[in-house]
Amino acid sequence: MESIGDFFRQVRETKGLTLDDVASKTRIHPEFLMALEEGNYARLPDQVFAKGFVRSYARSLGLDEEEAMRRFADSAGSFYSKQSELELLRVRQVADERQRQANRKVIFAAAAVAVLALILLLGREQSTMTRHRPAVEAEPPAAPAGPAGPATGALRGQSERKPSDSAPVRRGPERTEAGPPAATEPKPQEAAPVLGAPTVSQEASLSLPTVPTSPLAGLPGQTEPARSGALVLDLEALELSWVVVQIDGASPHEALMRPGDRVQWKASDRFTLTLGNAGGVRGSLNGKPLDPFGPRGRVARDIVLKRP
Image (cartoon, rainbow, N blue to C red):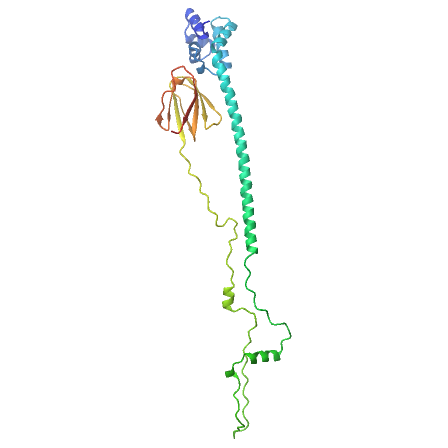
């Protein structure tokens, strides 16, 4: 059985109609009618719209719509079965991406808990080191407490007085004619130093070293890793073509590109392309032209473009 496209073209030419005539009756763009006659189903929209085009085309030519639909199923069945497989693959990729995002969230949460535990552990060790610092040498015991009176001060002063400060020893009774010897004024006694009180030099020697209070003091800092250059993909449509682009394993993007349309995508690692009209699209990666994707009217699937 001949294809639905050849069947429509023969009937249209027999009736002396052009594609523009059929387009004015069906309100379908002539490019889609031409793609239907050529059997280039990749240039058509989704299968639901393509079936509507077939019914409208058959109705405009006065043909049996059901017979036209059977011919369309025989002609385009293999193509749309592959499209359904591609759709299942797309759904599976979306599910896998969601699972990877959930796993990343779990990993980030575990990393945050580990960092928090490390900070708490360092803080506890720091406080333990502060409590167990080496003890300062014990000061000599202070004098026993007791009532301090003038007698105690006098005795302490006499014990610390040098022999030169004592009164001169009399060798014999000597008297002067002026009268009795004048009473000498008592020298003020210097304040006796308190036992056990540290001097200035001792206080300086007992000063403790400063201990860092931050639990992360002394740890090396982390530097931000340098980002690598992005991949830039430029596509230009020479003919009408259906394009599916998957960027870095994310959800695919679909677009119907008309002649002269230009589009640009950016990725970190790679692109995966599916072209409905491989010869109708040309592209460049980071400004370098790419080899042709395939002949005109052919479907090219799973074209991987990544960093060389």
